[in-house]
Length: 261
Ligand code: PGA
Image 1 (cartoon, rainbow, N blue to C red):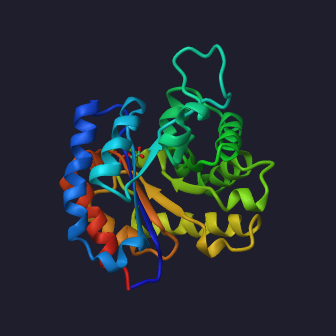
Image 2 (cartoon, helix red, strand yellow):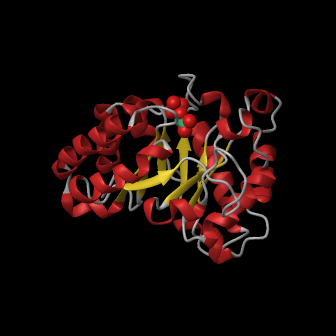
């Protein structure tokens, strides 16, 4: 049992049409009132849908699933310009509350660098979003004993030039690259070890590191979510595959409620 507050976040990646997205949210809106309403403020429920679903989902959310937070999976660091195919903070302003920044697929498939991540975080903060910065080591880095070095470098580069007040508005999702979409999860102990390290690093930057939110991501499922969420320094989960199925996503939310006092 714990006094922690949780964020349970779903990253839908490039899955779900607009109709499927709004349908999911309506379904979730029917299930949420079955949770202990006296504890609902202790768990933030957040979905990162494809960008085209954000606006219709906001309308559905307001009517059918109040309290569910919406976030964008990515954003360009410029406000506007000749960047075909990109979306800016200005366009997302009033639609999303969170922006996922530096997800491993953005880093590895779309070649985003720590410097890009830093620029995007700064823009997101300027527009009043809550940035969720993703970090994590590859399998080669883990096997070479370089996990902490890599994580530390991503933290330092991603948060460079930010004030303590800005850093307090950010959350971190630690997602070991080898665990994303592979079915291989870090053990709760492996995840806790890195989370404790991240909190120690954050402590060097802000005065209240104990309330800083650090989420775990990588093959989180209903079956492993309780033990992961029970770890001292884990404040939530970022879920890919299992967040696409309403029953699985809701089961993970239920597990977070079981861990509340
Ligand atoms: P996964 O994805 O849960 O399918 O491993 C996690 C993520 O990419 O955020």
